[in-house]
Length: 581
Image 1: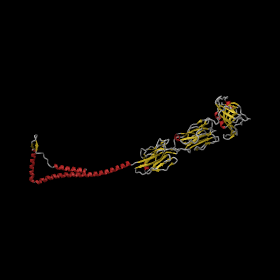
Image 2 (image 1 turned 90 degrees about the vertical axis):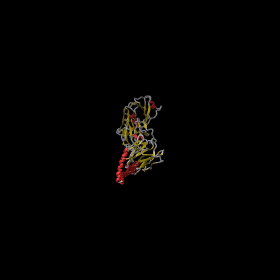
Image 3 (image 1 turned 180 degrees about the vertical axis):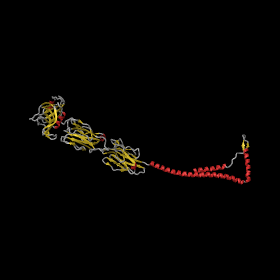
Image 4 (image 1 turned 60 degrees about the vertical axis):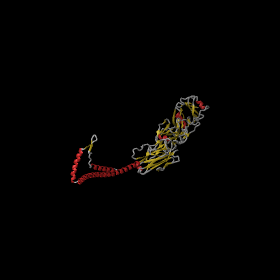
């Protein structure tokens, strides 16, 4: 088009030059104001001069003049035309060169634009779809969107993950799920199903990673929403998200693929991306037992301490061997109720609660969980105590054992149970605060009738019937005594009878004896007359030398079962009235 325009301009220029070579004269006549033609004198004069000149030329040669005139005009015209044509040719050549360069540039630009378009089209997206309890397969989502549900308490049961890859890098995606009752399944890839369908088995955790060249240029981030906790922190590239050994369901998942150099990648924190459950195997405990010392560590609800040997527990230690990297938050706290001390301070994992070397019994215990441990688990514990044996299972901070009746704890069991699961046994009657023997007062009971006429400096009264070999323990006041316990006893035999009358308690001690025997826990009421235990081998609390009760047997004192003697020793204050008849 530009060439055509230039040629047209050239033709117009040539015509213009041709016409300028022809003289143009004004008209001979000029009209005056009235319209009358008047002669143009200047023009006539010019024509006269020209005529003379023409005559001179004609004399030489008309043909020569005509040739001269034509040659002059032609040369002038040809020169101009040639100049113009040469200019046009140069311009056309330049235009051709510019056009060639333009076409080359245009081609390069088109290639660059094509490459830019290709780059714009390059992407790596992750697509995923979840199979959810009571719903089935959901619609597919992509790149950071939520698959599954939150706030509905519905478990994910299966998942499919695939890539939309237009990058020049080869590779795919591999992923695996941890399933209830199954554990980790084998990894699958590129849209295959991981999990189960139709079996109502929850996904408990997931892990995934990119494969091939993709893994060198991209990272895959993911996080799971688990029951009782919510969204776990982001993790990436084959790490576990969810829980293991916790029996907790995954409810939802979000996945993103990000270039390794992308500054907008999800934040990876120091928080755990998955939680590790605990079991009775890693909950261990040990007791310090009278005459034995520290027992071996045990677990799984097994017994620590002794039964049937009458040995007191003096202290306890509890530990939990969690994987620190992915452990549940929180700890186990415990405290013991100790003879003459009461409740001790709360202790935590690995710390000893109780006494050692002081011969003081543990009477009760309380154990509780904190943090995430308390969210997912209940802790149960059962005590074996003096006179009662095994009590029911206490839980989560309840008191197990006894207080106020001076009964020793002899053994203990501890169980860690996932919330929602059944307790390990009976959960009633796990605490005692009254002695074993608590018969109801009888209106025809001679001892109780007699007691109502007695007074005491304390709220306690001790009645002893030597004929029937019984000791009655009363609580209250004059005229309002209630019998709290009735025990069999061994008063003085006929040759060494027990003193009779009304006396006052004024002393006590842990033991007395000879080279052959020991009597434990005496309470003194008159001279050398005492309430005390039956006879044991010297220094022993387990080997009884003479345990006779229910008939006159002593040298004047009143013998009792060691547990009842200990109760008097611990609970009946000085100044209490003692009536012996």
